[in-house]
Length: 168
Image (cartoon, rainbow, N blue to C red; front, side, top):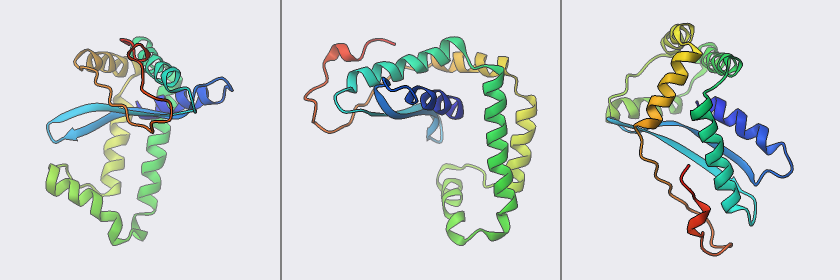
């Protein structure tokens, strides 16, 4: 999801009238027993409302229309390429590279995996996952969520008017 949304947001930023500079969205682990969705949008000056509206509209397009077969193929390829690079560079890792995964393992109970194991699991999942299954699961995930928008930013544009954020 994060790869596809980043690709779509990047394509939007290529247009001169895009109200934001960059954006990202994807699923995240809030705690060991709770997942959620996290996104950000970096607005152009004076375009906070338009940026949020465009951001939420893009997310809604993904949820309603799903992703395409070609988007799925590119996402799988990018994920596996990144993990393959991790396998190839595993012998050159330094102690600091182990800290994050080991902390997650200790505090959150996430399994610690070697790059080779992580690649093997991802490769197997990528071969099995279809775009239809992904789109169905994505739709179900959003039906089970309650949207919460936390807005942070500099007070350069005054207060954000309530009509800026509409039900998406």
